[in-house]
Amino acid sequence: MTAITIDETGCLAIPLAIRQQLGLTVAQSLNLEIINGCIILQPINPEPKVHREGTALVLETQPLGNLDSFIDDLREERIHSQISP
Image (cartoon, rainbow, N blue to C red):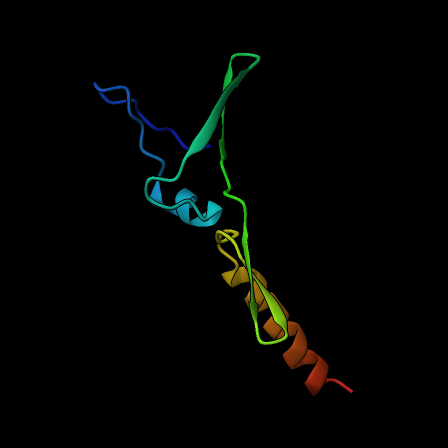
């Protein structure tokens, strides 16, 4: 758990590592909900944009968070599958 502080204007700062992990961007809107005395923040994801490029449909969405470790794991699996008989 990460501790943060509310400043004198009522604002709180979400640490950079958490913003990167969740793919949050500057000025992104969040829903705030209170459940059993807990504050729940959820990103509001705008409707994805779809357009055609040639014969392909392209979906434009917000980043899904930090995918580096997922991509690294897939890369390692492929390398091992090529090396191992």
